[in-house]
Image 1 (cartoon, helix red, strand yellow):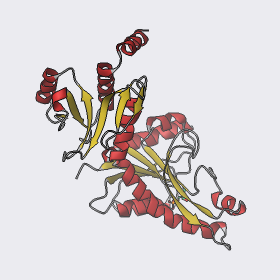
Image 2: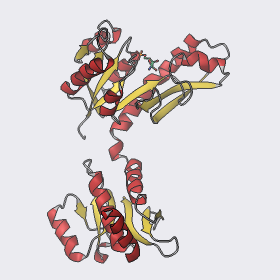
Image 3: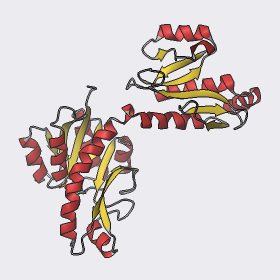
Length: 321
Ligand code: GRF
């Protein structure tokens, strides 16, 4: 199995979500491991639980420190523990922008509502008062705005006619404990998910001038030029023609470049079945170490190979500008 993602959990209280994350991590095939549980409250009940499970803990009260100072101390503790992700689980602190920026796309939170509904506190009563048939919980990436980052996953929980805020909170918590370990696992392994990989390629390909997507024999492909006369500059392949992995087909200058690449980096490049002779080469996208800038460069180079001369010239002028 691939290396596990290393996470730190930040808590302020009882830590029941933390518990769910810890127990899920005990299964051999869980893709993350917990390096640290840290709190702004040395008396947080969750810290005792983490200690009993032999997970390193850290506590630093926020009292008497500026927000930036306290965030910096937590940041250093997380980095020292060797964690690559921060998972907020009932961490009752507003985070400074600089802290959030440092952990952009590597910090998750769970919130007890179906975001974007009911950001902030008192979510259960607000859902009941609004007469909603359902509330639930959301796991989202943390951005500077409170409870506003992209939602990764949600679970709906039905509201019963006689629900109080407490009874609803209790049921939503059960859903949280299922959702958090599951969506964290999916998030830390996203780079192996074909859909995620395809989305990255698509974004880079469509960033180039006058491009559009069109499937070719069932594979997504990208063309430059008009819908009518456009030419393909890239194809995405996933288990096509009996090939094992995921790859991106791009156009080289010809057979010389093709064989040079195959020789220079046989782990990264391979000859795609049926296309090889026309100068196409496949770049592997499932090594787990994809350099997306390199892929963007390949797409741009391939685009230049097939784009109408006029467009390439315009692009060059724009680049020099
Ligand atoms: C949960 O309700 C969670 O949705 C919110 O804070 C609470 C944490 O509870 N972010 P616990 O400490 O995980 O038990």
